[in-house]
Image (cartoon, helix red, strand yellow):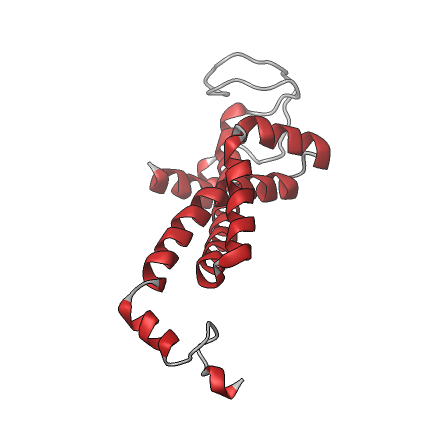
Length: 167
């Protein structure tokens, strides 16, 4: 299903029956041989709009996912590595964000910051990064208590992987 969607987005120029910005004189035209899904209020073909809309959808989804994973993994590993007060502050902030319903919170933030594509991507990525944070923190904490890490700490190595004596 996803590969089909990506295929449609990549080859939209060849699949779409009309140009992306082409406008016809018939607004709200019904389904016909010429317009498979009809036209919208400006006279644009709806099938063409759906095909070209796949590009925006995929771009927003990929950007949101990459940003979400970058923020969640980096903060989760920082919390697991340094523990203490940093871990407590980040974990409580994530708990607060996860306690608020995501859709309602995203709509409120979009109202405050404006409904541009950039703010949409950032807001959704930050709200979704909470799950990634918890997972990466848990994995990081599991690694932090392994024997080879404990041995390295007993030898005097710090979190920056250099000897504490060299500092």
